[in-house]
Length: 258
Length: 218
Image (cartoon, rainbow over the protein chains, first blue to last red):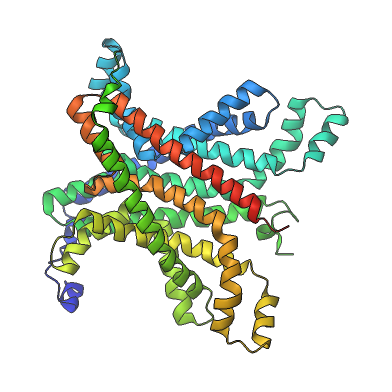
């Protein structure tokens, strides 16, 4: 109200919509759903992305080509379009029958969230999109290790699998911690796109509050602060991780303390 | 599963207009946000705390929130500030400029910092003032160093313009959604626009890679 008064604006702020029942509860629910969606999608992205990244550096031509095509395609199309694809296009190509019916009517209350097709599509979209980005990060990390290390390890009698297990993965994974932290931050921000397919995360709930109260600016402010809090928390946590796992002498950011 | 790809041909003019609108938003946004990025990036490097901290706060704040939030901000705020509703193109354009400016500011900062300090000292000792040294010595080299990162950012922005969908701007994703709903042909339409986005961004990323090799310091 004060701010509006100073600027001479024609808008009556009503911040109480943020904690009044039921709107405050909606926003909290949205916050929880944002966290659950992002963390589960991150688990998928890590598993798929690590496999993709390793395959892209391996000397097997066909798996490498497939992994490269996957990564390039999903990195270079908008996440929004991918979400629409999973949510609107995939049901269209499923044959009419029990699977399609099950998907359409899925609505299962679990202790952590309501399991429905909106959630599954958001999870698939966010997980696959991020897995491509993680795959690219892992590939870059492994390839930044000097080739001579691989050659030295191979000539000392290790098998290729052993080279990956004892040389490339331990070094490469520590190198990629900073860019992976950025991807982890991004997945929370990107989860906001799930609003477009109706998954009830925090951005979706601000839209709900807006349509019930016409107080969109207050609701968006609340959501902005929630995202900012998530970002700052993760950034602080990741900074500590980066220092702890930095390879001495290799990454300037972590090694300047001596 | 019966697919009907003629849907793309039959809706060609609409899809093309969506693509043109996407390009229009992306090109205008990158141009304007580059100017904002140069200013914010340079201010962040300033020694004056009154210039440094506001620039740093703007950059870190924007980078901490999702693009959708920034779009909604201007969507809800603009009518209040302007006293009348803005059309969705203007509203989206402002949001993209403000959002992208923060990311470009970091690229500009890295670009400026990539120019060796000795160059500034040499320029100043030949009698140039600090702003002159910036304009004639540092920025020309810095901008050259930034080009690959700028192309990469443009690729991201090109994909991000799909989010203008959410406030009703008729770019490629919005028109695709309209066609898909009218014709019940989600698979064909979304596959098609995914390929369109992919061809554009992949071509640009190949270009970025070539530029990077050409511009790499020998």
